[in-house]
Length: 236
Image (cartoon, rainbow, N blue to C red; front, side, top):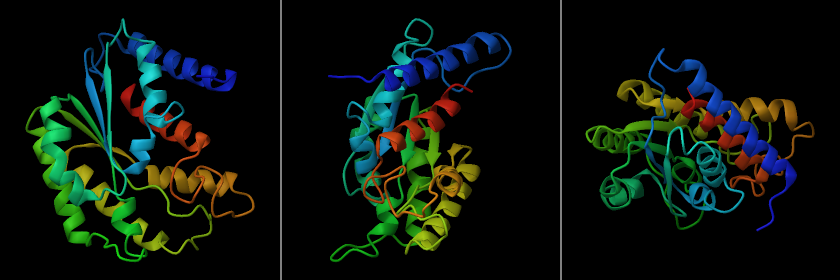
């Protein structure tokens, strides 16, 4: 497998930053990431692709492996293409709880919205989306594991609010934020972060090609971007 100098430098940078967080804060407070953690990334095709060599899950795994002596964390990908929150509910026991994680990252919501606009598919009503997230998180937290909940990112990268499903994505992101607050989960607000990034980096208002290659799935830059946001939480 060929690894570019740019990717290697980014992984090294993430690793150094994470190590610094542990050293500086040692003895002062409890960090989110703890020694021996088993982290499961639970989601749809974005997470399924995230375990590929340049995927966001792999970038995080490589960054944490560089700190094996300090934290010895294990990373497991559990993404399946086309999944919605209802699908996560059905496979929660098998793909998450049975593996006894200590941290679960939930990145879901794109298909719950996107499928409203695709033929022969069905989106998830807002009430089911919210109750489903709460059920999943409650079951995870009952085992003592910690949860990071991500808001859905983008379905189209235009920065002026003209992507057809922007309004609905914003509504589902509000739900995710509320659920994170109500359940005491850590929030990774990818919707907000993507929106802010695209306003300053998508200068020609393109619908794809900045952080995604097809309006939804992450490009190499998108995978690095998501990995960086989650590492910022993990290293707190």
